[in-house]
Image (cartoon, rainbow, N blue to C red; front, top):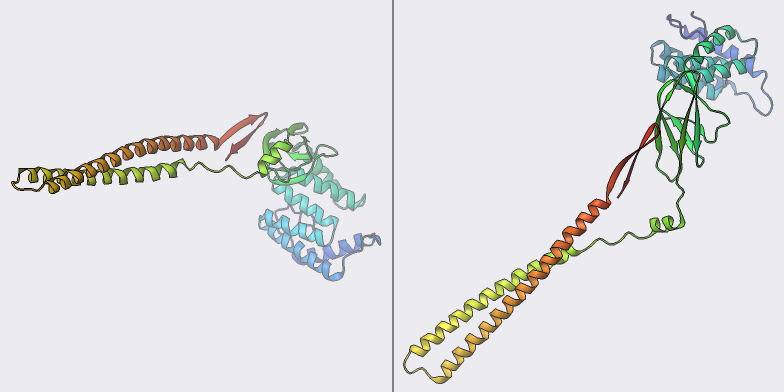
Length: 328
């Protein structure tokens, strides 16, 4: 079949005939336009015809996704049942049977009883009945629903929408909340069921979410400072201890030297005692500071462990789906 609407034919379609047929088809349909819905002008129709021709060319090259974009743009510029047929045929080739069924159903509705390809479309619709099912979606709050990342509408639906058969990913999205997905198997002629529950934030939850995050523990910084202080005190204790030993040696030498005055001996003894006291004091301070540094070091490790436990991710299974949750 190589007619305007026979896109499933193997032979390519001539673009010149397409453009003329598009204009003629639109002229016939636009005569029914009401004042509330004015028909597009000639320039818009010409632009739509160009997109339509591009769509046919891409379809004949088996670039169905690009072809679908062009057909949809043509219909957006100048609504025409002929384009709906081509959209349905392209969706059929993409195995998006639910979208194909909806487009062809709309084609039958808009083209009326005199549609030249009604018999062919009705036959295709019979085939599509065995390739679609329905999906009943229940949500605790109104949410945007997509199937395999294509939006199909917002809950609540007036009736379960058509969905192509197969293993499908159903995603519910609400503003301000992370999308939630479930996987479901759609069988021909049957209705699958999924439910999404969105937890509304309580007053306490909202308050806690807006409150400033708790300050991180500075135990690690304190421990570092204490360890530096411990080192400095230890070095000071060692230095003054060496000086005290040297002063003690000088005192011993002066005592062994004949004629050393009493005042010299007293001075040496005083220096030795003073340096010894300072060395002992610095050593004691170094020990105390080291103990404090050790305590804060253990506390820093404990805080780091608690923070690591607080940041967790969990995989939860529910019905036919799974969700990933975590706190950070």
